[in-house]
Length: 370
Image (cartoon, rainbow, N blue to C red):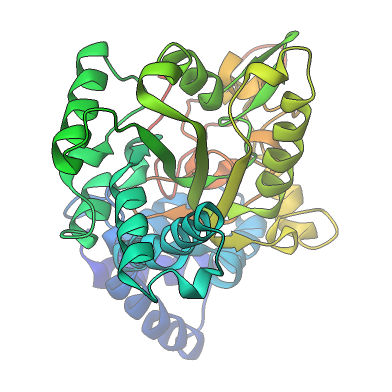
């Protein structure tokens, strides 16, 4: 289906008159060209206009206007250039100030004075080289982060994932000591990087009487390296390019609870969290703010999209997304499961005691747990 045909089909599906059709076609064509067609899961001949027409047809005629209005007025879509911009700002706006503040504390001076003389500038440069930058997931865009900071950060300081072999640990330590010409040098700061946090539970959560999440994986990986690879006063900084207010609250509160737990004294050092952009609670879809679309979400829902992994979020169902986040969010490389399920869910109709409709996605999600 080409775009012109797709637009004509949309006009028929939504019952637009000629004036309304011309107005909407102009808007949709621009949005598709400059934003939505960049979604990675779209293929030639089935991009945004065609997918929108297909998506709307799964709903009853009386529900299509509410579905279209949701996409038109509420959808938040981050393009590749917008995400890359967050990646590029990460070091100068978040990491460099953190490094400068840490160097100032160690030297007993004000942060603005760190580059005032050669001695303090050398201390900052040593601290920078004594830092590790680790991606928490594929979405961390470590390749883009590394390119954006070429000449500032060396490749030997950047690790792609938390699962680090003993051989790799020995190699990065050797590279550090060679670069500093100091056989006793150790790492002083660790920066963890990820793209998005919807609930924050992937990073840290208390589940079934134990702490879980990526921070626990980090702790298990490094706790036997503390004496050999890290200084006694090493620091930890975690940055997300994008997060919700809900995730921010959860991570801050959970980190404090974990630290005050029975074995909290032998855990990670105090964590400094930072975020490129925070999505406010007011963006979440709710029955009070989006009554018609909320009704559609509940009526056009198939519980077969739920799994043991989505149950971790604690929501009775995930019509409003994992953890009930209710986000209208799409990232160009994938759609978070924290977004409303109608945007990304895909399943066939079920004909059991409680029949449920098929769900067809507008922005198909690539599941991490298949």
